[in-house]
Image (cartoon, rainbow, N blue to C red; front, side, top):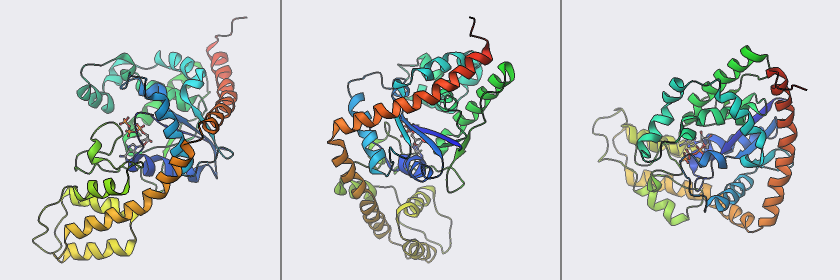
Length: 330
Ligand code: ATP
């Protein structure tokens, strides 16, 4: 069957963007494809060099994977650092990635603004490590949010360069979302996307308790309301409606759309509705994840078994890679 690969960095608690951009697709894809889902602990070192919380975050991400519906009998779950084949491929692909193109990557330019004190080479070559994660399994599809579109384009570039230089090994991986378009869940402050490690108060985490969810939603930016019928919505109001599309009943959204067009909308009510729908959506996942997190032994076994299965496929790829490159001398 066709192969799928995707992962999340253990840089903090998972949020609605991770869920709708990534996890929701994983859960469906495990029924149809040959899926590998990993926890990208090596990637987190580029921006989070402090490793003290890493173990806890790995266990937490794994718990949320399982709570969202991933089934270790239907997909392979593993931790990136348990697959050394990835870092070997990363070395070879680094020779096919050019400094200029890496420096032009949007996420690199953003991250060096956020962390000017730590512009390390790993940050620059992040897209190469990501390409290695994907290509090590010879993946066809990569379920990701819109923020990863450019990285995926680079993965195709590096894979194609390898194929042209050394011989055909890698298929061209495509970004994937069941809704056809890649998703971006906006940050509640109206600027950028929800993310694990920036804008904590403008991001709804799957671990947030009900009151915190309500508080954050009620603080989302609005204004005093439209003054002309059928006017265009400002970006921050579009964001609120976009978030409702993820968790609310279509009939409720229609009602607020009509109220907006008639200038009778009350943003307080709109946000209350969104808050309650989010609470209803998130609380069962949060409670399930909490229960799963308690059995550390079970979690570690799932990751160990997953790493073994992932290594089988990765080793196959590396044999093809070394053969194609002529690195088997004797
Ligand atoms: P960090 O703050 O550590 O960079 P992040 O929240 O951006 O973390 P990643 O671990 O980089 O998350 O990404 C995990 C997955 O979640 C990726 O597939 C990414 O595309 C998706 N994702 C992250 N944020 C969003 C968002 N706001 N909307 C949609 N998808 C998202």
